[in-house]
Image 1 (cartoon, one colour):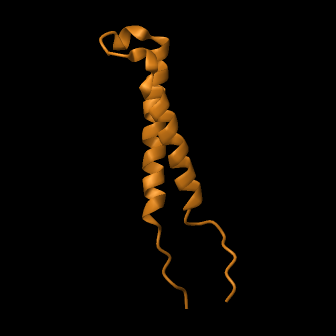
Image 2 (cartoon, rainbow, N blue to C red; image 1 turned 120 degrees about the vertical axis):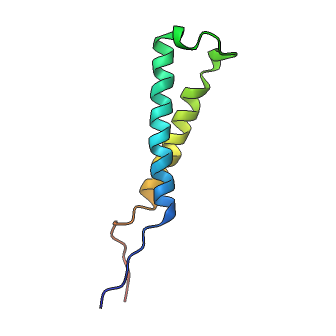
Image 3 (cartoon, rainbow, N blue to C red; image 1 turned 135 degrees about the vertical axis):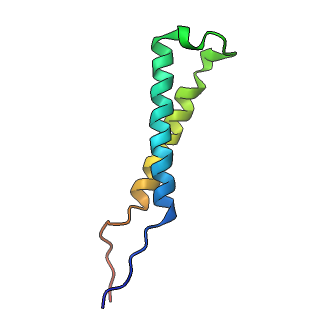
Length: 77
């Protein structure tokens, strides 16, 4: 008899962080290439969107790989 396999919520959290991180990182890189887009932003020289996008993408990739639901585990029955 087969048991029900549940997908961990952390897999979806990681996927969401990964997607949002890539989008924010892409927008930050675009703003770096075309600085006229964010001319009125205070402290734009810090490029917070690039930093936060990269951090979110790395954390999201970690959670997505760590809690991937269909990877093979070594269970001894």
